[in-house]
Structures are given as C-alpha cells and as structure tokens.
Length: 429
Image (tube, rainbow, N blue to C red; front, top):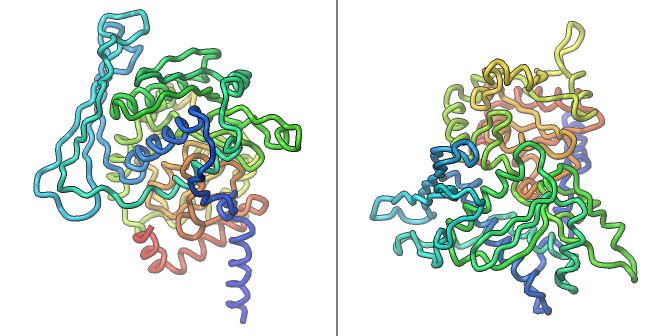
C-alpha cells in the first residue's frame, strides 16, 4: 500500500513540476494554413525550416566533424574555417563510402574592409548526397515550434516597421539578399556571442547556397527575453516586434535561435559542438553507468542566480547527505590555471547530473544531456530551440525547484535501487 502511494505521489509530482511550458497547448501542431502571408514572414518560415533542419543534423544525429585553421580576428592575414561533414541518412547501408565535404570560410584574404569578395558565395546549390541514399521521411520533433513562434504574425505578416521596432534592444541587424549576408551592429554583444552567432549564419549560407531566402531580422544577444505578450493584447494592440534571441519563456514572444556556443565559447575554452561531442562520447566510454559515482553532480557558477545558491544547500555535510555533489566554478581562477578543472568530457563520471538555470536558461544543458547520465532537471522557466521537445521521465527526471534537496535525494535513491531499469532506459533515449 505504501509503495502504491509513493507511485501515486511520484506521478502527481512529475506532471505538476516538470515545466513542460507550452508542450500540451493546442497551438503546437498548427498546420500550414492557406492565409495571406507577407514575403518577410514566408522568408522567416522557410529560414526556420532550413535552419532547424541543419541543426537536426548538427545536434541530434551527431555527425559533423569540423577542423579550424584559425578563427576570424586571430590572424589578420589569413583566416580559413574548413567544415567537413559526413552525410548519413537512415535506411539501407550505402554502396559507396561517404564523402567528406569541405566548405571553406575565408573572408579576409588580405581584404580588411570587412566585405567578402563578390564571387565568394556560391550561387547554386549542389546535392552532395548519393542518389541511392533515401532522404529522411520526417522532420525533427522541434519543427512543430516554428509555427508557434511565428503565430503572433500569422494574420498581419511582418512589416518593415515591425522589424525596426525590434531595434530598441537588438545587438545587430542581419539582412540576407541573394545569398549574401549584410550586418549592421548597434551594440557589441557580451564577449563574442554576436561574432559566433554570425559565424554560424555564414556557415549556413556557405553550406546551402541559393537555398536561404532573402530576409531581414533583428537579433538580441542578451539572456533574458523582453517582448512581453501582455503588451500586445487587446483590440487596439499593435503586432509585436519580431526579435530573435537564444531563449524564451511563456510570458514573452521572442523568437528562439540556436545559441552561440554551438560554434564555440572562446572565453571559457568551450569548443564547437561537433568536436566537443566527440570528446564527450569518448568520456562516456571511460566508465559504464553502473561503475560511475552513485551521486548527482553539478558544477557551475552559483552566484548568477538565487536558485543555484539554493542548490548549494544540497551538498553533502556532516549532518546530511542528499545524494548530491555540488561544486562552485570560479572561471577567473580557472582561466589563470589553464582550464584544467573544467574539461566537460571529464565530468561524465557520476550516475546523475543536475541541470539548473542561471540568470536565464543555460548553455550547459546540452553538455549535461550528452553525458549518458540521468539528467536531473530542476524545473525551469526558460526554454531554448530544442528543449521544448524534451519529455520528462524519458529525456530527464524532473526536480522540484521549491524542494530541491529532497527531490534530488528521492531521484538518486530510486535510481540506485533500480539500476537495471535505469540502464535499460538510458539505452532507449
């Protein structure tokens, strides 16, 4: 009877504390409606589809392999990025070996005007895939959110005036015309967020010439979403400004875009995703889940958010062991010591890893999820472009934000008591 009550309380807890945002709203699966669309909105819709298709390969299939000769700005005379891609589709095994595609990015070439040569961008798209490899039959799960993010402009379309109104907080304006990118910077982004974001867009244009439509958008590199939905309600309300950023929440209308760290975070020595993912895969091989430390691990900067400071209370002490091992990360000291204690591939040594937001959402979530540990996800407020499709108890174990320590202990104790089931579930994720 007690076991049944615990199961009931656990089910009730999952659905009340999972933080699924808008996952079960009726507007998730909006169809393509035959309504009048402005050219700008249609371009954004196509841009979203192409961008998220690339990230479906870039993030989910884990097939990219990039080598960098140097990053723009480090060597003023010569800067070349070579991206090598293995294209693999599900289905039958191909008869021919996979070919690596090299896509150079070289906008310096002795030119210090900040403008790429006229003939730099290819004008046509060539299919690199062999014809005997069938294309995927379905889109990534997070494609459904394209319609949700663009829903505020479904009836009105997006006008030039709306775009200009987004300039109030934007860091830069991006215009793509005939496959060429033009950027106007208003405010320098924090560290190199804007630089790495634009680097990713350049790769998009270089990788799919002739496929990216003409578009005009404003981008805000600050963490917190600012376009409040309550400001654009009512019969006389104007349409909201379309503003792109890295995260959103249920109270705002900002359009989410993959964060800069997918292409690297130089200031804290984080490599581009494709190379780092290979290191994480190697790190996962060092210890089987059964052989890992039977605790929940978290390491990060706690001073950026009250919730993280509260998490420190869950650390082991002489009086209490909540099953958590929590460590503060001093990035200034770490940079002085050569980042020896912050290697992400060396942190896949515990059975459980905790994700908790910082001042807003945190880029650490993808690294934690890639560790083949059970992700204990403290109920979040914010979402990024792919986390809205994560399912509790399948992709992660939800943790209460108002009772973290006991919630973590319950998860750790349950997992350690059901090791075979956890191991089986990890293989199926």
